[in-house]
Length: 483
Ligand code: GLN
Image (tube, rainbow, N blue to C red; front, side, top):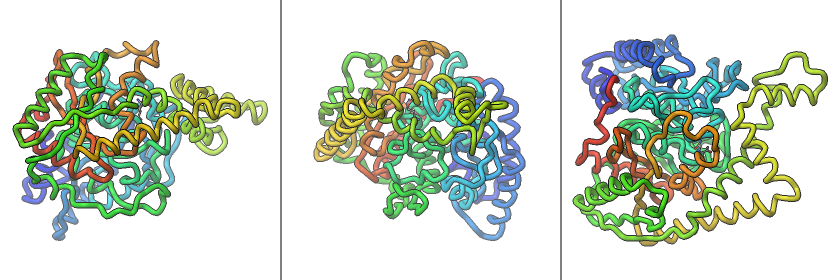
């Protein structure tokens, strides 16, 4: 039962082959049995799950239908869930029970999805390895000595290990696409503003975007359908109608113009990944796509710009965790300053503290123009590169990551080495564009992802290209041994 995709589950439930309650029990048992190896969950919500599953079964019995009605999922632990711990992977919020549901959580619950639990993540979504979580590192089901990617590593590891069919995740600089690549999943970061950020604990507000992680493009379409849409509670939410994503999955790729940026294949990319990317290009050519070399000349400046903007926004967003209103408070503070200092010093881990310091520095009066303003200018150049490219092509294709998943601990002493691994993903966040990663093969038994980028609001196009590719390849169907 655990091998089923969301689409298969929806058909099985509609055909009354099993109930949501039965399926939920099977998956909860599987999580209890296998998750100790992975550490992909921070909280399990068994009671809520069984309650929601039973309610979904009743709704189906009463004639309701819907692809998510009775479908088991989990939420990355930065989506607020009413009355349930929402930790953001941090000691700071270990004791925080959200007083309300995030819009994404509420929308999926209304569609009948069943919440099995909250998944592990890098602390405050800062990281690319899921090693900065206060709840411990997550392991990659493809090789337990390797990282699953981050920051949505818990969602990725759980779905890859078939503990559940799909999960929510968020992507500020690659945190949906990079763990998707590292664990052989399909993950989609939507256009900025497509999915509400209300109730999604902020890391860098101008970059953060929620999206689906699943095994197939077909399943990402189903989950995104439940997540997307205008929300008046989020001032950056965009009031654009949500298309029927599943309906866009049948389009032919004949004549589709795919741009391949020449900058993507420079030094730093593992040649074995380069070869797999070339194979995926050939596959898409067979399906009728036309390949064109393009250039994204400002790509080299994206990492430095991102690692100024993201920490700057984080330092501001995280100032609310002061020991007064939310989360961890130190014992017996001497005075207010001591309360702030010790609560924050004890509550935040080293990577979060590093980012707050970098961000506060970049925003400080004497350095604002030199760093923050400069970074914003680069951001515009990065966006302009994409706008020029999309005048010529329909999608942009390349690797999701320069290397496969590294060994646990391998980059812990060198944060910059980890930042450099984000080279292919962060440009989409700087520009606000949608991006998808899909399985494209293996290197040393570890999965490799190919990334597709599209113009604003063309999530349907990305999902269709990935779906056509998946109809003709079987990388996405491979299961890690032992799971
Ligand atoms: N690795 C990037 C960072 O650490 C991206 C994280 C994310 O997308 N949340 O900031």
